[in-house]
Image (tube, rainbow, N blue to C red):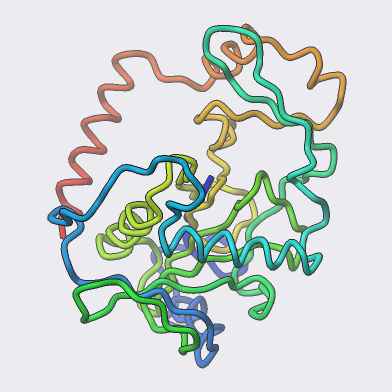
Length: 277
């Protein structure tokens, strides 16, 4: 799973935010050197070399292998509070095949970008390149208007699953993701080229300091990964007793009716047309 969040400062940002607040998210990384994955300028819509992923480990793309290798390296260094790969997972009985995970150590915590440990939590950044093909630069400064790939361990390390990261647009002159950053996020998903990669957008997590994308995210009263059919339970009893009927009831409580869905669909299409790059 993956998530995107927008930076605030210490309180919710408003339209009256100062230039200093706007620059805060970038300045805390200014001069920091890390791995830079540079996206080529060739249009991925015209990329004839793209092949659908087969699910075979040998077929990992460069970006997918980089993300998982950096995540695993932090896991072996003990950066996380617990080993999420040891969590019990089951398929909930029923036709929908919802997944349930028993995780008694997970705690919902806000994402605070300005407090992260740059050495441990910043895995790498993604930026643009003038070259046709994408490439990996082993060590370079974090550029403005890049995308940061981060694990959130400074406060409470809470991975939801293997490879759970935050994907954070980082710039010095904007409060919210723009067409450029959204296009880069799509490019990241395209170049990872893995069916297991799920990207969620979050802008409502209480106490968060930034708008971000996660390989897991929080969305109002419904956790974002629950939208993908993946449910976390903090007690063995709840985990054992969960039914598909109970999951349907939880989902329906926050679902739109047909009329409301069409309104949201039209709104999304209208916004997407304005974000064309």
